[in-house]
Image (cartoon, rainbow, N blue to C red; front, top):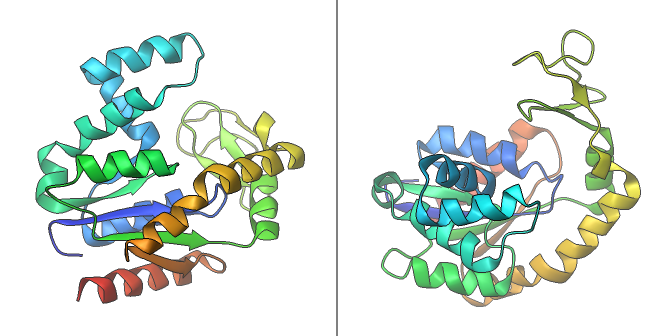
Length: 219
């Protein structure tokens, strides 16, 4: 990926998307921008949309699209994304958000959208085995626990199973994804931006597949 490349990563929760985005960010030396990162940064900086987002978050309410889109636009206008490019993770989630992103990036359009495809049974297995630090959010698994009991290696926080990582809750989230986010696949495919990459298997092998796909698209 040369400076200026702009990439969106799609994929269901449990596909290993966040980990792979981090790896690609390091490999290609471009920012990995997730929805959570953008929101936290906007709130911390006290931007116009960050202040609005904080009001909803403090009230425990879902953020409306106009605020999410505003936070995304604020982030994508920063010099690092405009000069080097970025890997966008967690946005867009719907066709309407994709249309808004296309408008935001009209002067510097997306180069590539990757769908990290993982079978449903693998996603269910991964999420059911996932354990998360309550303090820093670091991810572990039943088969890959912290070094000392269920105490986070990074911050010493307690590592637990999330309440919404039960099989029923996971299936509900996957159903929501299929209803709302999966149509994005067709939307980007129609615009000749989509590449599908197999996300199943050893993480190093998946990373290598992603790098080959991006390098091929950039030639």
